[in-house]
Length: 127
Image 1 (spheres, helix red, strand yellow):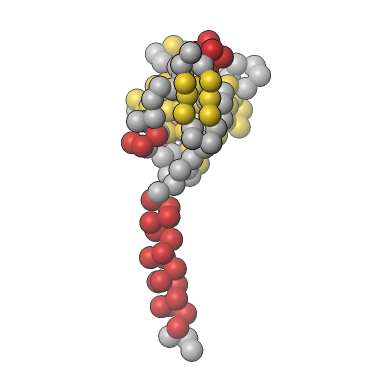
Image 2 (cartoon, one colour; image 1 turned 135 degrees about the vertical axis):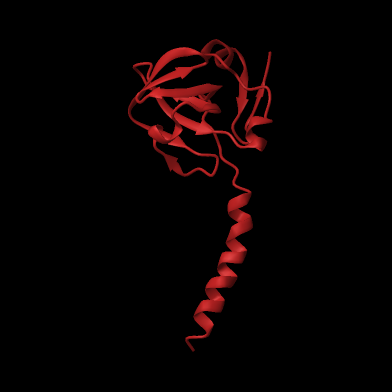
């Protein structure tokens, strides 16, 4: 009976691996696209302008796992991000190749307010 458990776990791991590789994340309508460089946490450069991570900011890797800002020091990363009510960066998602290929994506609040977003297909439409 004990021989069945390892083989069942191996089968489960083989089945789950492709599902994890095809992760499709849904971004909120207020998520903007940009480049981030962590300089001295919580200080960052956002699109080459000084900005700050909010207390409790969440940074998610391309695999959707949480990352610590200190692990990203000095790296230029293409991300989607959102702000909190005080204008601090609240959420950051490091983009994988498929997500980065989704264009157009707004890079400013003004664009996001004037474009329309379809949350089901995760696409933006310019006016």
